[in-house]
Length: 108
Image 1 (cartoon, helix red, strand yellow):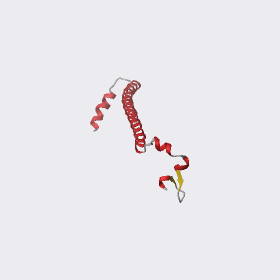
Image 2: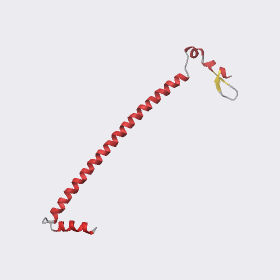
Image 3: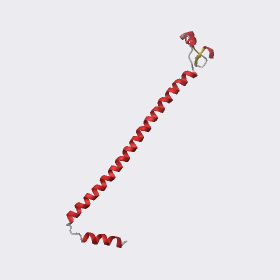
Image 4: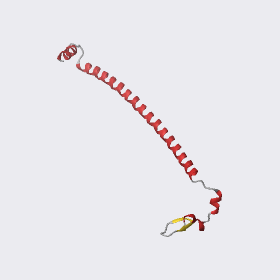
């Protein structure tokens, strides 16, 4: 392990560049690597965001379909016939049974 550090240290020591130039070069390399990694992360973030938006749009469509089905199903289970609606008057539609429960004339 020590041998892997020695050639690099000897190479840097034999460099004719002053320390401030070497530091500037290393900083530029690190900055370029940082910007590249930041670009990759931004691409990943945008991909996740677009998948989330697509998923939310799909969920919204499913919810609309569910509400339509519920609305349609309610009318199918409890159809209101025109003749039945007209035959019930407010006075005969509901009556109070013993115990205070409100029901229709058929319930009594």
